[in-house]
Image (cartoon, rainbow, N blue to C red; front, side):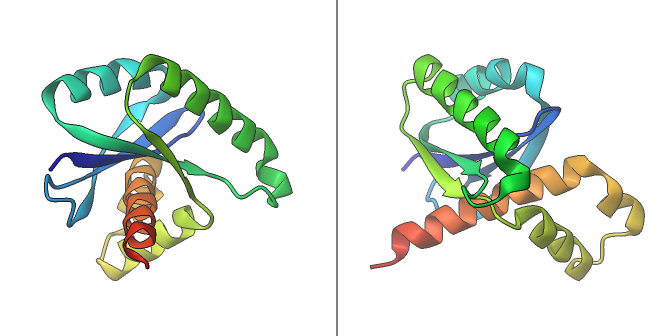
Length: 138
């Protein structure tokens, strides 16, 4: 089987998460400066077999996130043009808050929780977990 890869797209930084090759466990991979995202993805996809790219999308009803939603939609459009893999969209509502909760439960220190890079890559893994759960559901 091939991996699943998730993206928590941001204007400055983008969190990346992947599954194991058997698509059982999602785990945070890294955070990439958004300006370098396509070169990172192209390099990663040359080295790893990926089945689907899952992109977190803000909910339509979230008015404060309207600009971010448009930016994500533009990114997804470019991604589909440049990369010949299926792209799935998954709701990213509250993933940043959930990522902080996960870090607290794991005993992460305040300094680690303040690093936005950590929140971004954990958020990507939460997006990927949501996608995997939704695909399992009957």
